[in-house]
Amino acid sequence: MAIGIVATLKVKEGQEAAFTSVFKELAASVRANEPGNFYYDLYKSKTEPRTFVVLERYKDADALAAHRKAPHMAAAGPKLGAVLDGAPVVTLLDEA
Image (cartoon, rainbow, N blue to C red; front, side):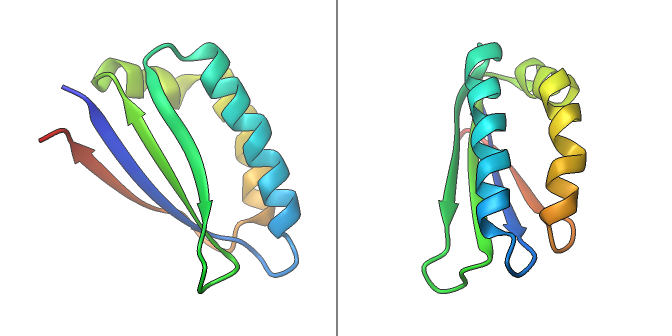
């Protein structure tokens, strides 16, 4: 069964461009190296300029586990941590 994720991230003031750059690099690695990922897309809030939402979809729990353990995720962690204003709010979804 497919798994969806909605991750809401707040970025430190003045760090929006840095965040977007890191995310684009990460997204390219996800798309190139994770066949179980169907999409990994970034959206920016129209009303809160420092709030971003990532929409993700995985083939199944194994694909999500592979994503979480991927080297590119580990490499991106410190870069994202430097620009985020707090922990992401993550919602896991089962395909209905």
